[in-house]
Length: 254
Image (cartoon, rainbow, N blue to C red; front, side, top):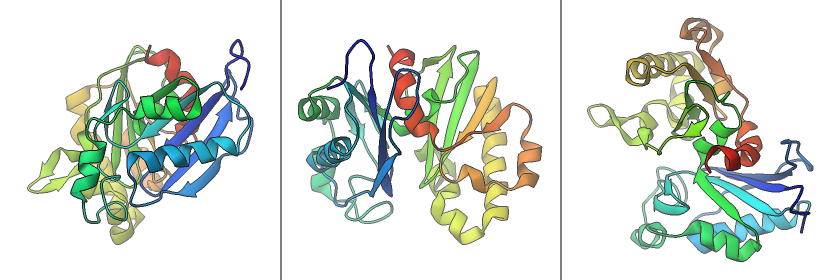
């Protein structure tokens, strides 16, 4: 156990394809290289908690934990999570027993009980955003990975989460299916980047942000031509923010 007067945070970034973690000091400095494991499926709550505990055991001591995971999370309780209710990962068969297991699951309480430290559980895009926002004005964070993640901040304070990824874009297409990883793999970076620009320009009159941050593992694949056209109010940020945000999230959400 670390010294409570100098908090060390176990930051865990849970994605559809992998779960990674590290321990950071109060200034956000990593005290160990991030460790990563493939996301295990099927993944009921107890298996996720076990995975988090195993990652934590391989890292330096900590006295609190921040976990970012996909889906709608309210006050540490899972309302819905899209990937972890499937048989073998995103876009595979949804298992009804996993839907039941996750719905209403107090995942924060389970993690606190297992790790023996206070925990903060948020949507993964919210943790990512905590690592990059300036704290001034309205700031929107979009993460590009397996699907589309989002988080909205006003004056550095986290707004209630919206599952923008599942909103219809056209006909039966959602934002997730329009610019998620399968479409990038199918289209190639150039055409996929045009879709990203289409999404950004479509959301601009909805949010009227002061700054938009594009993160997630696929943000680095946006073509230079599209980046030049997105505007000065759009910034690409490193995927490492999903870990670094684990410290700052405590001050932005309390």
